[in-house]
Image (cartoon, rainbow, N blue to C red):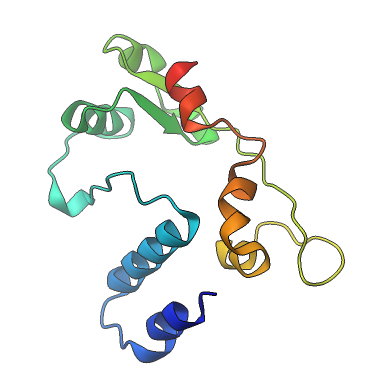
Length: 141
């Protein structure tokens, strides 16, 4: 299902900068997982200010974000009251890695999203998001 695009990316293209390969991979994964409706802003396109949670808060201000998802370790540096004071909801992600059938018996966790795509194709997005808070729950909850 993905052979042509992956062959072009990994075998037919000569990358001179790692960032360009990473961007191509990111765009491929967005397309394969069906998450192309969200706007993506590269850090190099906009000037953001601050450090740690101030930097994230500046992202929200400049881009009109009403909610932000932090990694679980964000609790070590994020001051939620700063976001609440500006009407921005903060959520600390507690990602639950899904288990899915793989080619061979048993389950090997935390592989690349390529493993999920190769095993489940278009159903990968729903598997990836299973047992985790959805965007709708985050924005409405």
